[in-house]
Length: 435
Image (cartoon, rainbow, N blue to C red; front, top):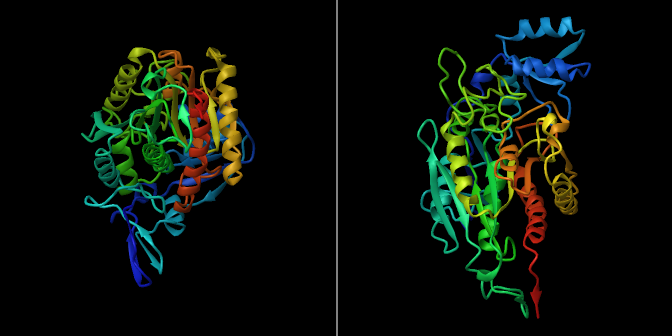
């Protein structure tokens, strides 16, 4: 392990970078609507005027910038929607309520550390910087079952890392007295693709995705018989920006010509029902880009997924997000529903949700992403519509109220997701043991 014992003396644990990652939120407010009006809110989102902060139903909490506040008020007044300003300055609010301050002082605790010389496991008591993630992946690459490779570069030149966990290498590690009915090498080839971190502000996504990688690698009882491919951080530039400038940054870091607003929503940039429900405005949080696959990040993901699926063995794609405790299946465009194998996706999803609940009692709801406002051009829709993957999901992790999740939630969230995935993997690779 890469944990270091520190005894009972004072320890300062650096949990963030020196710059203020709330500064770009100065003057932003949170407005709470007194009535639900999904159509009006969706139009405000498409027009790039608000950032909806509710993810488990029609949004009534909106982040409003100083530049758009006047126009948003006008639209709401015309629609007869009243509201309350519940946060006057979001930067000040987040700074005052920061659960991961710049230097966190702990007394008599064991701290987990990750350095370039020693990072043999992902942190579970704190969020990792992108640099720390690279330290971990570099050391993981020495494991005989693992291959770590860059599938491309982000728009700012950072690597997009993919981890391939091979199904071989577990022979001889079966439960005592048990052997597989057939050799792993003779099992039908099945592959699974997991994606994390495509939305930069959803820090719990890469944190949990890295736990998944670590556990599958080191526990041969999980994922047995499956080839598992994982991209734990699909949007490294955006993630770095959330550590340095804007904790709630969502998009990549595209410099959009003829606009004062940067970034493309990478989860609206895929070429299936592209543009439906997404914003054409560069200032919108769901800005779709100039065309499908306009961004180097989605191009890299697409090409890698096509390669993985070249033999037609890709059985499941799961894009890991937050928040809302939801397991969503395609399609995000209601006009395209029902998707093929909808009932199969629903039933496997119920297996996942029921298993998750047994761990820490958390309820995850399984439903179609089309039950919300239209939102297409996403990873899961493209995997289902273009790759014809049988099982395709977007997993929205804890909790039900905020992107800024306490680090204490990292470990239990990972534990419950791992148990859920273990049951899903058993369903996908049902070969049994024999005595």
